Picture 1 (cartoon, rainbow, N blue to C red):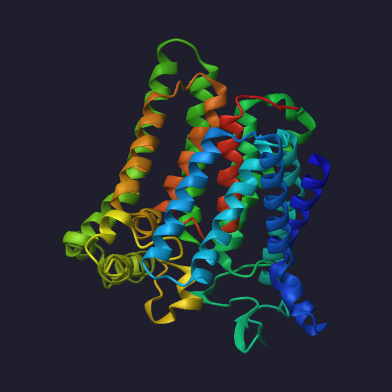
Picture 2 (picture 1 turned 30 degrees about the vertical axis):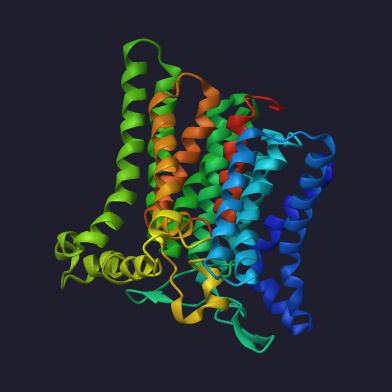
Amino acid sequence: MKNLTEKVLYIWFGFIIFEAPLRFFFFKAGVPSLVYLKDILLIGIFVAFALEATITAKMNKLMLSLLTLVLYAAVVGLINGLAPMQVAFGMKIVITFFVGFMAVYTLGLKKGFFISLYRIFTPIIILGLLLELLFDLPWIGFEYEAYGVIIPGSISWWTLDLPRLSGFGRVSYETAILLVCLSTLYLAVSLNNNNYFPAKWKVYDRIFLFLSFIGIILTTAKSSIFAFLMLILFYVLMKKATAVSGRFNHIAGAVIKVLMIIILLYGVMPPVLAAVSPGTLTGYLNSDDLILKAISASYVERMEIMWPDAYKLLSSGYMYFTGRGLGGVGASQKYFEPELYNAADNVYVYMLVDFGIIILPIILGLLIFKNLTLRINNRQNIFFLTFSLIFFSFGATLNVIESPTLMICLGFLLALWDRGGKGDS
């Protein structure tokens, strides 16, 4: 089962990485629905894991808690009148996280798998970006009609007269997220255990870390640029914290924890200001300077329009406490409530609308508590700290939940931490 799961995950990552040309060629071949095979693969893995857990009566406590949270949001959504298919669509979105978690915890997916993912797929993604930079690829900007709607096969867009490259990916920011996630898994395993890194591979790996950052810049995905820079800073600090004993070890560990809290506040405070006084921050960001405007325009739009509109989705007073329910914001709305569609573009806003202020403070409290109390010198905790870093870094400007790559990566990291060092080879 483990070997089969590894093969399926390789295929799934292949689908995600080559999604734009696959959509293009599947449509040309008259079978556009084949692109959804990637969803069927994940659902199949999830069902297999669920059946195994049911038969063996073994369920990881952390995963059970998270599943209970999802079921709570699903029930709330149905009570609040969301269409059953809308709630089901919301459940499909979060399945990716559980597949990542169960692949590691239930089947003991080895750490070497993540190194292979990085070494195989990172060069391919970078090649795709290079090809788009040099040539007119046939799938860039490609759209097709299926099921009575126009579906973008690949999104072509620009910023400051520069193309936002996506290469083989469907959209530039997902290509950037792929590069960040593959680098994250590689660096987390590297920090945890150096056995996978013989000298002959180190030059190769470092070259592609550098090229990954160049590739992310070519996508112009600001969230991913920020996350990658934080990842490298975290890696440098963690190397010092775990390699040097004595006083310096404690200083580096303290800096890491302070960094985590700062990044968390960077994501939490702006939505709070957007609820009470958005002009407090946007007044400083509005500018006639072309570069500053390009950097901050989308953020100003979030604070002044998107996040306030997301809060309005909690139409009844009690919803602020219970949430609107699973599928109550984001992609599910695009299909079932298009007139109310709101991307949220902040994981805390997204979770507030779905889960309410009963659940959100508990999640934030647990994350803060764990980050402040975990021992830095315990290498197994590197996986939880890396999980937090990625969640916090992207969570400030993305809803996170709807990125399949981010969700499966977070599932991998959390399970590697919770597994406690088993299955290292």
